[in-house]
Image (cartoon, rainbow over all chains, first blue to last red; front, side, top):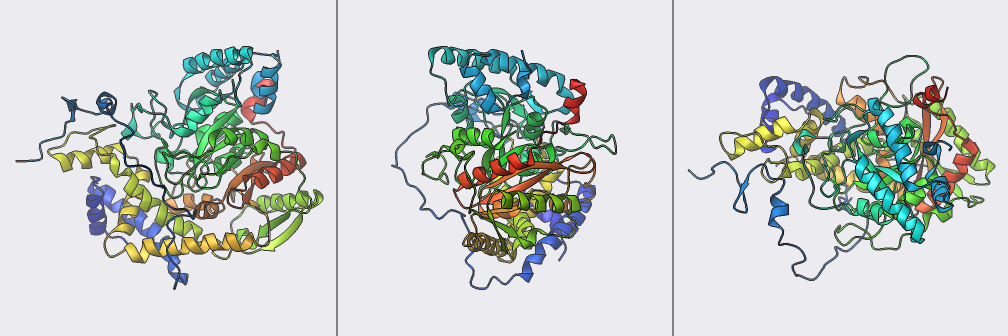
Length: 95
Length: 494
């Protein structure tokens, strides 16, 4: 299979990355090449093989459900492009 | 006084203990060397004043007799490790100016043991690359030059700045992260040693995430013993990383100098692939002979799914990256490009903030995870990953450690292998399988190519058996006696 220009547009929209028409065209070629390589996996028989999630067999550790952190809004906001009154500021989302 | 930048970490620690020189002198020598080697572009951010302050504190500890494992040793920190209050960029425009409000566990462990930080080392953007040519802060130049042409060479990637700094003697050691070969491949290209420990050995807390089921931190340095010392400091259980493994950290440096008599060394036939430089095949055979001479037994093994590791990687790593990099939205940190509305702001920010390779990987990852393709690509790749892992487990029934080349070629010139992404990806064919399986892997400098460039061999160990890897590494190192220096240093010495 190949990734045509419309598919690139759709995926770029899902990934929230703006692409120009010229970029979309180049990406279509590059991503198709990568996909072609990936499709060699179809040669492998994986019947009955459980997909792997973690290379290390371990139980997900649990900790006590209590607050261990917090009270540092200034530190959290220090890197924000824009903030006010303890909040992150974004463009208006409700009309 | 002798040139302090030529010492190994081990030698420097002995000198510091004997008060032959001070930590301040050692750090100053490296700062001076780093200033003279700025053209290599190893550091994104230099932290010389911090290093001076840390070195002074280190000298105080030596005076009091409370010095730690790496006290006074100047290192480079890959700019993927968050360092509190110090710019951490992941070599991306999207994180330019980002000053983390916390410290990564691995870097905190190194400071606990007294290391000093010279700077944040350059890398491929978000650690995605094999040549350090995707950094938003410029290419890193390999301190080695070919005998046959004058073109600057890549240091490998993603940890090109770390490896070039150690090879150019402007840092004694450096941290790295390895997702598909980012410690081992640059180590091979720059003629130094580097180890990716078992997945779960080092905490991932505070490391800018790329592919979380693969990312693992490790050191790069000039000898196996130096790597052992650094890993001892970096490794350990951390409740802040749920995939960090709770088991004691061995004293890795004790493995150095132990006999390999009777040890079974596996040689996987699938690593003889077309397109491998014949000099590298010869070097591999030399490595096998070194092991025989040291009394080890050579065993032929098979890892039948090796040839699918690269394809598996280019599904799983991009899938995880597309998810991890969703956080860069121009709201809470990093770059923001204002748009007409929130979605427009996201799209413009990410279009401008990410470089080409990062975008390619996010897009391919988004594609393989999208509705209708999830089973065909993502789950398929996860099943093949299981088979790759099983191959290693089967091989380790017959041997204790595997010996392979690290990379199919020596370092190439900047600009080569750029025509299409797949050619570049082939650089990682020998390093990716162990990443997919979570096994420890180490690259060692063993010889020079006919054009005078370093070539490396790779050792792959059983899960959490870094000790055997170090033991074997030291034996090869002694037999290989790799003493060649990069041309950048030879001309200075002359």
